[in-house]
Length: 223
Picture (tube, helix red, strand yellow):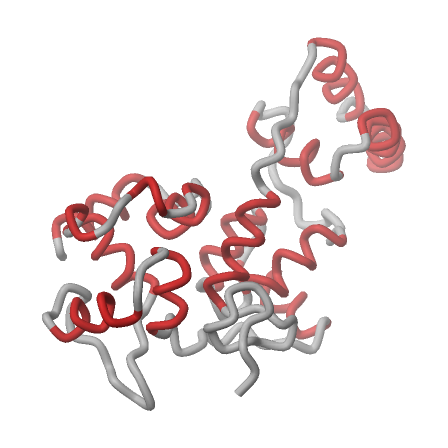
């Protein structure tokens, strides 16, 4: 078994990182803030006034001008209701990188929601990339130790006491993301929030800030 190149304890995937560190790495990439000026917003709106070629040229100019990823403008346009997500939108390298990183870690529905695409589109793209969307076995004790920044012994004791619910033990404990989210909500006294990566914490509870509030209420209520 190859160890994670980042934490040194989790089981590495093909990219050299364990599932927990992959989530952390991607979340850190999302911390970049985009500062939208009135000039940029005006150019974005103008880009959407015309046909597809006009839009493509307008987005190219904005990308070249700012150095931002193309999806930043596509997502902003949807947020401003300048346009809705369309079926013909091309897959960008950023989209593919996110899909590869989260495949097997998040559900297809959550990946689709983040990318603002349909589940069918996500499945088709993954087939083209010759990958799989099948969910993996979940977090190991080593994964949890890395993200909570605590000892394996502490987490094992909490697992055995049922703090994460009924956990399947198959060649070591395997904890689903939903079980981790439930633990975060129901047992806040069992961990130090200051020690946990905030981006990862939000990603688990709110699906990279895209999960709707009723999902949080469902987990909190234990239903």
